[in-house]
Image (cartoon, rainbow, N blue to C red; front, side):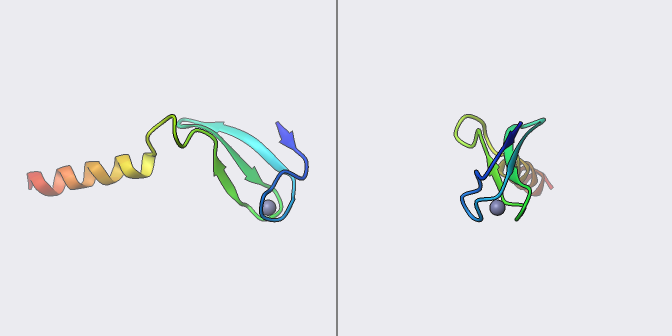
Length: 59
Ligand SMILES: [Zn+2]
């Protein structure tokens, strides 16, 4: 889905995409990324960090 002039930074065109973790919007002009479901789902970044801490504690 393409959203014209929806970028909060540069007022560029934003495309809505979907991946394994949910929907996000990316600006075609400046590349600005916005996660659509930040509050609804845990972030993959923090999940990876927890895994790393678990491995560090186990070794
Ligand atoms: Zn932009």
